[in-house]
Image (cartoon, rainbow, N blue to C red; front, side):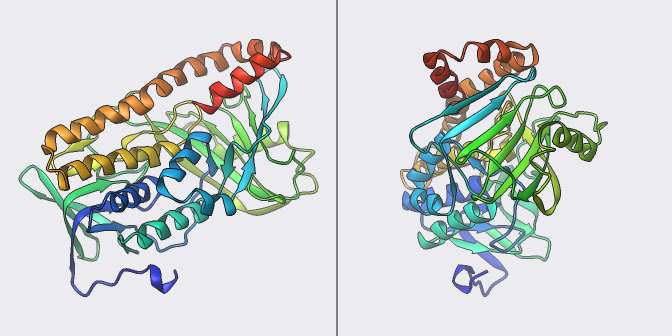
Length: 379
């Protein structure tokens, strides 16, 4: 990592107003917005140094682009992204429809780039970053979280701790068994595709979820599938191979695979429950705020980070009553995501029951085509 991005500390204990575990979009959005609101001592830790790779489809939805504007990084991210203006959608019964917009509505930006740009923004705004910091356990005083300690003995003491450590969170508020979406993906160069269009393929192999092709550059794409396997009975590599053979065999014939296939779980919930406790606030996928139908998490992570920053600003700078402000954060997250998450249940039923084919059959009508495109953009 470039030297200017390293926060040097001469003591084993770092003190902060807000300390953040995890430097993904959720944690970094929290840090950026905290500094925008004037919260002084903001410290971010991550178990890795930057720039670092992260397995992810890397699509930033229209709502995600709006959040990037709030954070002041929209132009920087757009310069390093592949613009998307359309969608090719294939249904379970093979219906194929193309929806295009006259303007760019979404982006594909690798997480290596996106997270690094968000980190630079946070550091430029005055936050500090501690790399190679493996948070081991939370520090508590009675029932209140007061920071955390690393596996090598370093400590961060903070008035408030933000938990942003993703799907495998060890520090989120207890919420019982997780619901998981499994994903596996790979990268190729030289795959033919319609410029500035992503592909979503709904196939019985992965119902009620889907497979995708997202272009990262004019020459390089990532292709993947997401599916449910609650008992871990399916062979992910064989399932992905079957999907590729069915939908991309010809187009991959002359392509060159880049690197190896990678899999990762996505933690989600259809209801947003407990996200806070005294001294602690949970954001993004650590709070299971990913979309149950699309598995999108970048927008939800950044949006929840902004809401968390606003709640913490009220407590630290406006002297709001902490318990009330934290409960307001939970309500704000429900307001932001609940309708979309409930809609995901309907979308899953539409896909599983063949309703998507019926909808697509009517898309020769321009108004209905625009309506479907608008609904999918708002999921």
